[in-house]
Image 1 (cartoon, rainbow, N blue to C red):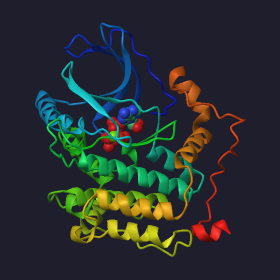
Image 2: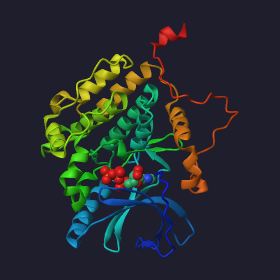
Image 3: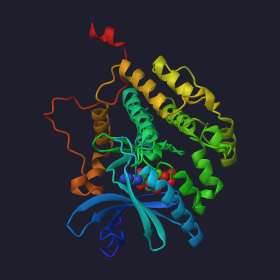
Image 4: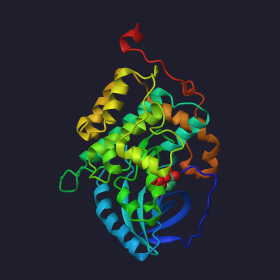
Length: 360
Ligand SMILES: Nc1ncnc2c1ncn2[C@@H]1O[C@H](COP(=O)(O)OP(=O)(O)OP(=O)(O)O)[C@@H](O)[C@H]1O
Ligand SMILES: [Mg+2]
């Protein structure tokens, strides 16, 4: 996504899809644990050109690559069935020079982690209405994955297993999209991520049962969502400066730092957060659908405005200086129109009052 380092690759970087189409690899968008994501262009013999994201896995041995390939064969078939505005679409998978890859929808924007960091670097919290809009969209995405059906109408019940702010992509248009569903199993197959450090960096969003190595289900995503919501509204789940093994131990216990009084948090919101963060899965929302309904109800009752517009403005404000440099012209965020009748979003906290009170 946004990075000042942009590597242009030659036209020889071409991935055959085996059906007459090929992907031309363009610049590198970023690197995660065990994979590099590049911008690509799917080219057909009929002249159709579709921009995509190409995730290339860095398997160090052929055994590892084979393991990743098998995992992708299982997961991509399922995840490709999810068609939801809050989920990054997955199109295809394959193999290139011994490296397994996945093609997905290209999101021109930044990750939620990047937006969050931009605010925390300035010692500010995301505005409450913006954070709640993003959270409600994430919950809808998780719910959409749960109810996705395959071509025969069988409900797939897709879960994420490793939800974090890095896996939430925010487009310049103000869309919120969850990526990397069920990718945790693929990551586990690459050696870089089997390390203690790799596990520890993910421990803070892990549900206790996942950290203990037990079977994860839809309720584990609910817990990770609760951590994300807490991070956005209150602060990190764990104290800073923990060692890797301390993080893992706390994750296994389901530890969450006690919360001091948060006057800006409306009562309904902390209710959703506490229920999502229950250590016992039985006490949590049973799945993301139930969570999404509850959160949407709370958000609507507050009269939160056009979240997508707020998000677009917040991104424009943070990244307008990079957009031109990093993206090709067709991916540039639409310029703010001085005559659009809106005041620029100032990013201050909105003081929520019940609707009835505001109308008066
Ligand atoms: N579909 C996409 N469109 C645009 N950028 C993407 C897309 N998918 C991933 N990226 C960006 O590419 C970079 C690497 O992504 P990747 O998923 O490999 O790592 P990560 O999300 O940072 O960590 P993890 O290994 O936990 O997934 C990140 O900056 C991410 O935001
Ligand atoms: Mg990712």
